[in-house]
Length: 483
Image (cartoon, rainbow, N blue to C red; front, side, top):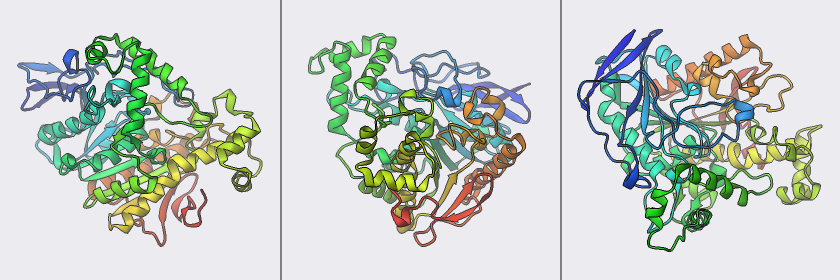
């Protein structure tokens, strides 16, 4: 069955299925082509007649995901003309429903808000809310930083443009522009931290859900980002100081840009590290504490739900043969000494070196920084709720890894057919756990509370989702310096 929505830009024809109206490939900005490559997004143009919104548009140009062994893979047409939204709503009527705007992960180089993995139909139907997935520019096209050459941050600007579009037009889809929750995972969650600090986002969203944000990577500062940009340009045989550098960048074939991204990543790879080559850029180098303080200060007046999975980095290491038996001297160096290595060994009996390295990476990059951010918010009076995802199939080499929580939040296991991270899981247990998580995320989007105690620095109440569900005090161990 078809569904129709009338917006200030023009009318849209979507599709109605199982109680949810879907509008696909909805443009929120002009195609960033030609002179608009590496430029801030420009407003979407209106149209006459009934625009077909029954099919997804292209996704941003990208290479294969680093995590396809754990998550499965996808194949979609790619184009720089990718700045579109996927909108799911119970009905495009005049009701004012809560809105969730989804920012996908993928290390700022892969993924799309329009992927089947992120189909928000179940959340929209069960929560009587409007769900919006955002496609934004990726890799160098979204995050290249070189003052005087690329002075904006196109990827972040795309996200802000999408939020502005939602504020202006979501009422046409039955949504309330004054009740918007921005929700993201991995790169999407870290980007939400960035959005919180941007004054122009004030009033565009009112709550934030940050799943597995890599805040432990610290602030990617302008000097380092500019140096990486120069390295990238040289891989393209472009002199970063030449007057024709930008025109040549804009004329470069997109496939060549993707090849150079891969070359840049390999050139800067470090043992047991997961640092992306492109990400949001801060003007100055900040300590982790300074970065988290900035985000916490900016969250004032907004509710936040934040957490991580117990074994995030196993997704990156488990399928990598080089990590199965790494050189002992490199492992000791990565831990900063034998004493730290032994502390980690003591807490995971019988662990392999890969397990210990993954534990360290999880603590450093994801879990402890998330809880420290919750600490910083609680200290400032921000109403914050913390969680940890602990479930994994019995004997899984991926354990409770990065991204494993996503099908539970979205409640769409059939759309994850190639996800080895889920293989061997008990279907009834998975369904019950998903139902509990969906109820919490929906409650948070509707009321600002997921129905467990708010986080404070005394109890550090954290909801644990696993084979048993319940609130624990300080499961990440930040109160006694586990890192």
